[in-house]
Length: 388
Image (cartoon, rainbow, N blue to C red; front, side, top):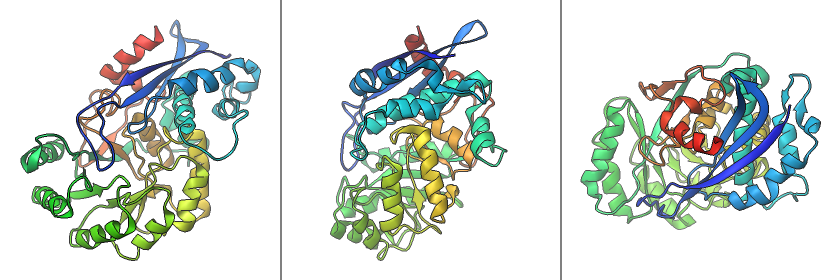
């Protein structure tokens, strides 16, 4: 049993939207296929992976450093002998050979993309949905396929206006979401408050709004927004300042009593631990958004979850960024609090398998082998071109 090939293509996911920091006019991602010599139903088992939006494709790093290390390793050194399968932890160690600690940057995205594909292949080899495999190996033994999801959107785009924002948010509510999210920080505070109030007027009982500044604010502006946002009953106030400015986040907690969220741009267990140690995050109300596809993959995410447990945090306070099926599988298998969702954006990489409906902001994952990409026809059509 061995990995025979690792393929990568860089795909555009461009659009005219922008948040407070970047526009997405030239956004790309890497799509990876990990090909094995294991045969199921007359075909080799292939695992797929891709990186989340907001970080660009990592084809150079994948092709030049990380894929060659896996393919050059002795096949037996990558096996889980106890399970007659590939061992994702050993594959991860091979990828990180000769990599110095720290300086996580873009390499965490490249490794996370391959790691996703490896876990997809491992679960397919065992003939199980990944979420059930994770529950058996690392959870309480029983997966919960019903997962909370919220609708992320509310970006700034040309000609949108308040009416366009209202149409977008109403469409999410009509599709079964009870929590929606919009961007702030890309307009003036007064304009952002007008946008917030427009969305709040659409919400019925049990429906909530979250806001996201995408790390735009300095401390003074973050506090100014916190004071203004305190008048609203928001689901959370997300990533007010630079994600590595733990002092800003800690001080902000002194000015905003309602829930906050951050973590999507922290790419290692060590950075996540520094947020918990120094960022003033409150385990009774705040949310953590670490995204395995951007942060060295599930192997590292397991270390992050262990660290959180040591610091008194429940995995139920984690709602990952990214809107992809890998995080859905982790949520269902390991008891996370839910997952982000992009109903209309970054397709075909976001969303759920065909036929999965959002009901009261929950989805129920079908029992598909691996991560379940094959159940999403538009996404699998793209993946099949890479599989050959």
